[in-house]
Image 1 (cartoon, rainbow, N blue to C red):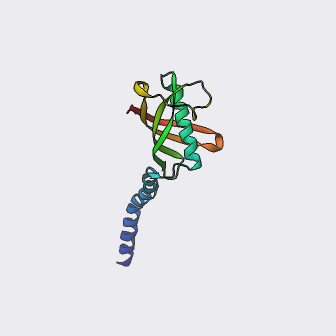
Image 2: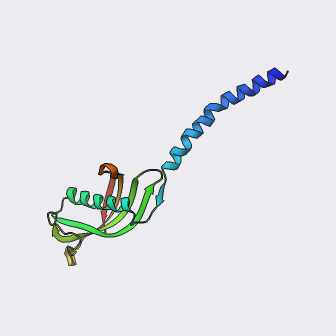
Image 3: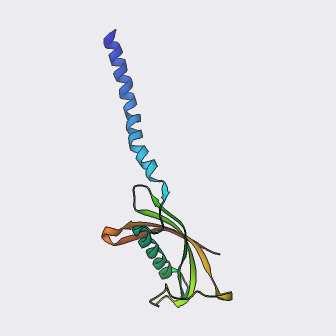
Length: 140
């Protein structure tokens, strides 16, 4: 009788092993998909913002450059260097070729344009590589 009970317990444990193994594999994956709030002045986040704004200016079909006005949301995906940012950008009076966009005045009056943008950037700073995973912008 004892040996049958032992076999029965071992069989049940064996059948539960894939479930337990699946949970061990699944839990870190589910947890890693969450974005968590971070400070907007952290080193890698600042680099990602600069990359996103630079990339935006390269591809946006406008002769004038945009610059960062405000960081609305700063987040990092848990256990990664993937950053989510919501930024407010303003159109400047400078063209994209101008060097000093930070000190360039914004367009004013009827020419004024502001955008709300969301960017997701994957950073690999040890290789000096940044990848834009997603971007959306809407005019305010």
